[in-house]
Amino acid sequence: MIVSEGLVQLYIPESSQSKGPGKIGAGFYNRSQQINRDLTILFIRKSGVRTFLDGFGSTGARGFRVERETGVEVTVCEKNPESYRYLERNSILNRSSAILKMKDFQDEVRDVPYDFIDVDPYGSVVRYADDAIRNIRNGGYIAFTATDLSALTGSAPSKTFRRYGSRLPNDSTRHEAGIRNLIAYLAKRAAVFDRYIEPQMSFWKSHFYRVIIRVFKGTTGSDAMLKNLGFLNKNVEVSEIYPSVDEGPVWTECINNQDILQKIEVPDYLENKSQLERFLELMKNEDISRYFIDLRDIGKKLGTDIPSFNKVFESLYSAGISKFGRTEFSVTGLKMQEGYEQVIEVFTRKR
Image (tube, rainbow, N blue to C red; front, side):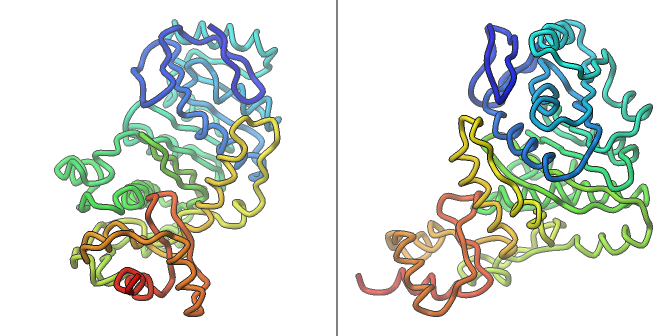
């Protein structure tokens, strides 16, 4: 069957799923990853890259959209012969000039340098991170999609430690912790090769994490970057309602490039424009603080109902607190630089 996404059309298998991670197979296409591709394209438009590698092409949804919607030079790799046939059909369908290669991702990045490498495997990025980091052009970008959330969040503790070297509680902040855990892993791998990273865009949606980093060469930068790895304790960072647990090591600094986020504009042709705009606004709040306070946690601790966000916001404004905002990581989460006790007071106030 043929589907439309962005400015392209795609032949995809009849068995393709519209929700969840789906099952890997020839011509794999995941509609629920469209927001992943949308945000990547919006980022590329503001990054100034010239060459882009879609390292796991499948139907070519990402590669053909990047070519059509950004104008950069695109190469698409796919090692599965049956999936490659979908690539060829979709290239003709979209009158694409993208370079198609029936080749393994790791072989391609070792042979050709790129400004932007997209790593979107099924599962963990661990097998592919080193090759991408070692071979990206200096100052280039790498985007990683990870779907091994149980390992990244701490919900499978032994796997979290074995794969990422971290110990994390599986609590209300697990998805921000998972993002920070993934960035920390990429930073450690970059340091091994005398490189350092700067996070550009980080988000969670449903069954996947997406992290875009910029990679530079240099031992001085690498040494400085490693100072951004450490342990976070929500009892200290946020509020005494949380137990005192040292979580990590995780990435302790910013997870987004706010300058680029401020410049992104969502074009009218994207069918989910309003959803993307709301999502980008939430992403702009993420670097207000490390971790957030969750209204459900306060309600559970105090044994009270959860007040509306309007009441919480009114209380914060009345107290002269203005640096706060909602988070993408929890529908009841609140990012703040200060004023957590003011939030708790709303719960105890007679209503």
